Image (cartoon, rainbow, N blue to C red; front, side):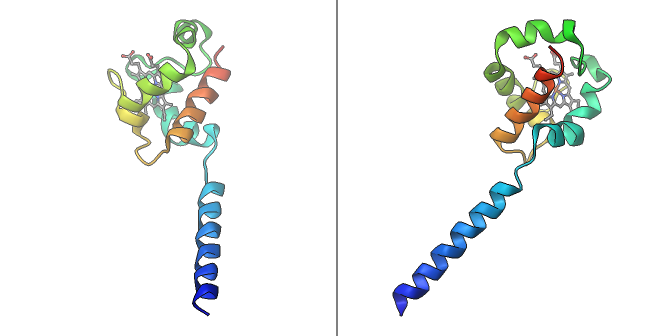
Length: 103
Ligand code: HEC
């Protein structure tokens, strides 16, 4: 009987984990919610979304590097680009979304 209870608990734990994963926000969601504020118009010198020239030298550094900078913050950009509850995957998705639309 104990074993059965344990199995039931494990089952629900696994289910819980899946539910959390499905709440994973897309790069577009994160961008629109958090990064858009500054990057849509270039507030405080932020590289503007879609501005090919501004992003060219950044893209050359590689996405991994950009994600690291976004994580720790730079100049007027706070750490995590203000998305303090973003996972690294979500932050990376947001950076990729900006890169893909600005190259
Ligand atoms: C409060 C305004 C603000 C918000 C919100 C913001 N940024 Fe930024 N971001 C900036 C500014 C300003 C810079 C330019 C920093 C500099 O070069 O001094 C920048 C630069 C960057 C860069 C280039 C980094 C580099 O290597 O120069 C990336 C990538 C980036 N932001 C990603 C993001 C992402 C992803 C988000 C949302 C999760 C975000 N930003 C939200 C202001 C913001």
